[in-house]
Length: 568
Ligand SMILES: Cc1cc2nc3c(=O)[nH]c(=O)nc-3n(C[C@H](O)[C@H](O)[C@H](O)COP(=O)(O)OP(=O)(O)OC[C@H]3O[C@@H](n4cnc5c(N)ncnc54)[C@H](O)[C@@H]3O)c2cc1C
Ligand code: SF4
Ligand code: SF4
Ligand code: SF4
Image (cartoon, rainbow, N blue to C red):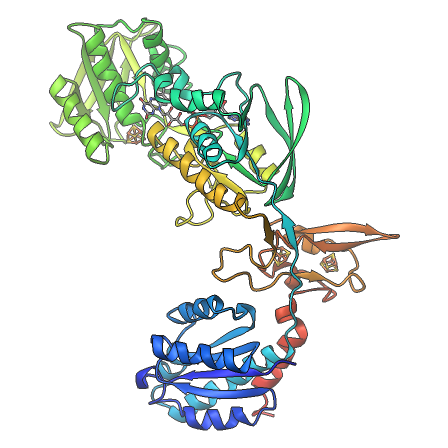
């Protein structure tokens, strides 16, 4: 059994003035499993950290126990530094002697010292009894699949291909472009939608590393990060691809405002999408256009702001005035959302151009006049405090982006969660294009309402993240982790003890447990590359068959025994 190096940090007296580190050192040195105990002034100072490294290196220690400040503070850096020096982080344990001991028991130094010694003893028990998870490595399929060929998917595919990765780009529609295919002028620069993505579409057509599959959808997904087996259903029948990473860029759609503000009953009450189509066919003539904002948005059911509909109304209000000389345009809003200097300038441009803005209250929404054809809108202006009746022959409803109906089924196939509204969920806000399932990345309006510029930028970000994964020739279960320095182990099922009850399969949030037929019974098997070491399966196994080798039940039992050693 490899011996254990212990480092106790004085933290410039923060620990040492309460806890008697010297007496703890003497006690620990009597344990036959301990090689050395070193007291340092401050482990987070480069000098002391270097000293710790040289002790570990010189004595060839496999296991390290550190008593210092909270592992959630500076100690994480120490752990990372040790990992960088080649120490296996799974065999580095930390005990919080400062926040959880010296500071909270400052008035009772003897008690604090006893607690510190007991905690260190428990961690020693863990290091002495722990086993190591076996690592498995897989070959990374260095190709990518991008689902959805709108601005986000196109930029992701172009980004991946430019970095040299073969990329399969699929879309359920027949041509790439997504929603921008129907937008003849895009805010804020008035560029036609198709023009905005032309360079990406050209790249898709010309770059031999990109293959576009039109009228194609995903029908099944198997495998895991580095080696997904994806079945596609398209005009050429079924195709199976093996790809290392998947980028989801399936977009969103605008809420259909059926029954709201006379939509569906009163003529010339239309959506923003219909307005775009009218512009595309030069059928947007009117004397006065009224735009109502936040239709079906920022309410109890959908409290979020869709971010694009305010600038979209500014664009279309100015366009109405440009294309119909003498026409008026009113934007009835609850707040105008135009964040950033570019959109702020765009708002000022609309004001100068003569677009009129009237603020209404959510509790007192505008009312539509007209039976068959819209004739006016009555609105209570919260700024002036008077009701106004606006005569109009066109009413445009600004509705928010909502998730695409296909999104939930795709999320299920790829085992990624959606948020409470149905958009694909990022794993953490600081990893905005990554998902819970390694190797699956998200971008564009499929993850949250954004403009086309933002969708393109997110597509590039997803491509970079996917590329950094695809660039590895192999990945291993223990190193593939967002925990810096590697994963802390993975669950392992003991086939002899497993009764095939399936509890672990039911609770695993990463679909890492599978029941497998062996002979005449089913036993659980862990797909190690998927396991995130969350421990859920261990806690529901009625037979103790599922364990984390690093902290199995024998280890936990020994730790508890040590905790009560003095009491006994
Ligand atoms: C009316 C309107 C006007 C707009 N005007 C502007 C503007 O002026 N300026 C601006 O910056 N933004 C504008 N936008 C927003 C802009 O269109 C979006 O930000 C942008 O299109 C988002 O790109 P995306 O790639 O994320 O999604 P999308 O453009 O929606 O593309 C998603 C693609 O995925 C495909 N897809 C979906 N599900 C599947 C599936 N299951 N399998 C295969 N393929 C699938 C779809 O067919 C589509 O091609 C406007 C939006 C609307 C609705
Ligand atoms: S961007 Fe859309 S949801 Fe947000 S305030 Fe404007 S109209 Fe409402
Ligand atoms: S530890 Fe968590 S992720 Fe791993 S197999 Fe068990 S439940 Fe799944
Ligand atoms: S919970 Fe335990 S006994 Fe049940 S299938 Fe999983 S490993 Fe086997």
